[in-house]
Image 1 (cartoon, rainbow, N blue to C red):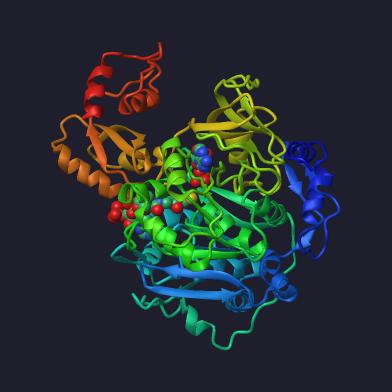
Image 2: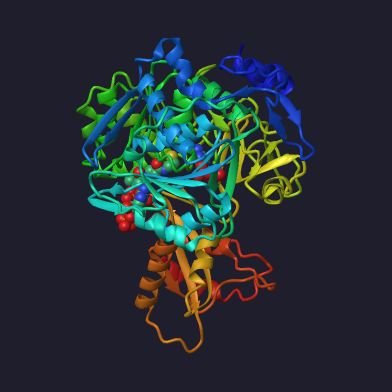
Amino acid sequence: MSYPREYESSLQRRDAFWLQQAKKLHWFKEPQQAVSLKPNGCADWFADGELNVSFMALDYHVDNGRGDQLALIYDSPVSGAKASYTFRELRDQVALFAGLLKKQHVKKGDRVVIYMPMIPQAAIAMLACARLGAVHSVVFGGFAPHELAVRIDDATPKVIVTASCGIEVNRVIPYKPMVDKAIEEANHKPAQVIVWQRPECQAELLPERDIDWQQGLQGVSPAECTVVAATDPLYVLYTSGTTGKPKGVVRDTGGYAVALHYSMNLVYGLKPGQVMFTASDVGWVVGHSYIVYGPLLAGVTTVLYEGKPVRTPDAGAFWRVCAEYGVNVLFSAPTAFRAVKKEDPEGLLFAGYDLSKLQRIYMAGERLDPATYEWTTAITGKPVYDHWWQTESGWPICANPVGAAEHPIKPGSATLPLPGYDVQILDYKGQPVGPNEQGAVAIKLPLPPGCLTTIWNNEERFVSGYLSEFEGYYSTGDGGYKDDDGYVFIMGRTDDVINVAGHRLSTGEMEEILAQDNAVAECAVIGVHDELKGQVPVGLVITKDGVQVSAEELTARLVQLVRDEIGAVACLKRILVVPRLPKTRSGKILRRVLRQLADGEPVQVPSTIDDPSCIDELREQLAG
Ligand code: COA
Ligand code: AMP
C-alpha cells in the first residue's frame, strides 16, 4: 500500500486498519473491535482484547525461536560494567523479580514506583510489573526527593523499587537517602522499598520496610503472566504541566503495544534481530517506548546505556557503542549531538569506528535545528531524521515513514503525520489555517492507539488541559505550521513548558519554588535560548521592600532551592533581580515579551501593557 493510502486508511477505515496491526501481536484473546468511542471524543482501543505486554515482549519470543538472541545489552562507561541478556535470560529475571513483587502482595492494578538509574534492573522492574498487571510509575533519577514525594502521593504505590545509587560523570549519587526523604515528606507511605545494591555504594536498609533485591530473590518462585484487558493501565508517567503538580499520563496496555510494534518498522525501519540504541533514560517516555517496550515487542535488541554523549570518556561514546554492538538505529536528543559537535566538531572520533551497520539516526525531545541536522548528516554520512512526539502520545506523531515509503528530508521539519494522527493547524478560534500559516498544532479526535487515555486520578484535568481549548481536538501545546507538501514544522511550546537538554520542565513550577523565598515579592521564570541545551531557565525576581540581600547571595539561595526541590536537571543558574516586570493592565506577567527580550528577537509589545517604560531597562539587564 502506498503511504498516502496507508495514512488515509488509518483514518477512514480505522477499525479494519488497526485490527490488522493488532493481529501481528500475540494476544490471549484477540480483539474483535478496535475503536470504542467515548463521550469525550476519545477512544478505548481493543476493549475486548486480553493480553500481557511482558509476555508479548519476552515469553513470546522465547517460545518462537528467539530465546538465545540478545534482548538487552547494558553498557555503562560510568561504572565500567557491561552485561547482556538473551530473551530467555531476561524473561527469567523478569519472572523472578515479579515473583518477589508478588511475595510483597503486589497484584494487578497496584502501583509500583521505580526510581532507578540506567541499569538493567530498571527495565526488569518495569517488565516485572507488567507481568503482574501492576501499574509502574518510573520517576527520573535526576529528580530531587520533593518531586519523588509528589509522585508518591499521587500514585500511592504499594512498593518502591530503587537502587543504592546512580552514577553521574565522576560522581556517585546515593539514591536511598533521597527515597527515604521523599517517603518522609509524602503523606502516602509505601509498604516496602526494594533496593538493588550496587558495588559503588551500599544503601542502609530499614529492617521492617526495606528489602535487598538480591537477597530477596532467594527462594522466590517465578511469577506467571497475569491476563489484563487491553484498556487496563500499563503505567503512569508524570510529566511537567504548567503548574507545580505534574500530570500523571496514563498509558493503556493493548493500544500502546499495537502502536509501538507498528512504529518499530514504520518509523525506524527495524526488523526482528536488529539492534536499536536509544540514548535517553527510562525515566522519560522515550525510554519507556524505545529502550524498553518497543524494541522488545518487535524482537529487536535494545542497548541500555548508562553514560553521557561526552565526557564518558569522550565525544566518541555513541560511536563506540554503535560499533561495538552493531547498532542499526541510533536515537537521542539534538542536545546530545550538539554536545558531541562542540567537543569534536570535525567528527574525528566518528572516523575511528566501523559504523557500517548504522543505518539511520533519529532525534526527538526538541526541534532538530537545521545546524545540528546538517552537522550530523555531514559527519556521519547517514540519514538523520527529526520526529516529533510527547509523553502524552507515547509514540511519534510526525515522522518520516521510512518503513512504508521514505520521504525527502526537509531540515527543520518532523516530516509527515503518522497513520492515526489527523494533525491540524488551528487559529485561536479553532479554525484550520492554510499552508505555511502558523497556528496551534492540534490532533482531531479520536487519538490513535498508544496515546494517553487520561490523567491519573484526574479526568477533569485531562479534559481541561487537552480537550477543552478546541472542541473535537486534542491540544498538543505546540505551535507550528504545515508547508505546501503537508510537512509539519513544530516551532515550540505555546505554554509555560520548556525543554532543557531534552528534559521537559515547567517554568510555573520553578516560579512557585522561587516564591517560597522570604526575600521574593514577585517572580517570573522564562526559557531562553541556549547553544547546547536548547533552552535554559532564567529567573527574574523582584525583592520585597526593605529586604537586605545582595544579588549574589539571593542567586545562590534560589539556585540551591530549585536544585533541592526539582533537582540539578532544572539547570536554573541565572537569576536577575529586577525593579519591575512587564505586565498587562490586568496584572498578567508578559512572559512572551521577556522571552523575546532575552533572545534578542523583535519584541511585540501588546497594547494591553501597563507600563511600556520597563521594556528598555529589562532589555539591558537580560542582554547582560
Ligand atoms: N541523576 C542525578 N543527577 C542527574 C541525572 C540523573 N539521572 N541526570 C542529570 N543529572 C544532573 C547532572 O549531573 C547535572 O548536575 P550538575 O549541574 O551538578 O553538573 C545536572 O543534572 C544537569 O544535567 P544535564 O542536563 O544532563 O547536563 P550535563 O551538562 O551533565 O549534560 C548533555 C549535557 C547534553 C550531554 C546531556 O543533557 C544529555 O545527554 N542530554 C540528552 C538528554 C536526553 O536524552 N533526553 C531525553 C529525551 S530523548
Ligand atoms: P516530552 O513530553 O518530554 O517528550 O516533551 C514533548 C515536547 O517536546 C513537545 O510538546 C515539543 O514541544 C517538544 N518536542 C519533542 N520532540 C520534538 C521535535 N521533534 N520537534 C519539535 N519539538 C519537539
